[in-house]
Image (cartoon, rainbow, N blue to C red; front, side, top):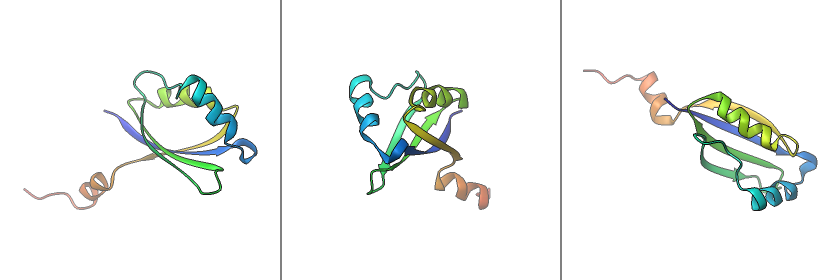
Amino acid sequence: MSQLYMVIERFRNGDPKPVYARFAEKGRLAPEGLTYVNSWIDEDLKTCYQVMDSPTRELLDQWIANWSDLVDFEVISVITSQDAKARVIPESP
């Protein structure tokens, strides 16, 4: 079973250029099994909000290690709205 993670990336010194340069040169640097879902960047280009899907937290941590010299990370385990609704209001038989 996989887990979704909201990854909040704060670019060091508020500078996204080194991140985009590495991405252009080396790609996402994600280990096999870790899946990029989507991402959004704030209008100041200082923070990225990214959803990743992974069967283990260890794979996510491997990916973070590839970028931690350029980015400060905050990771939050999340579920979809549909899954949340099912937990709050279980369907009756």
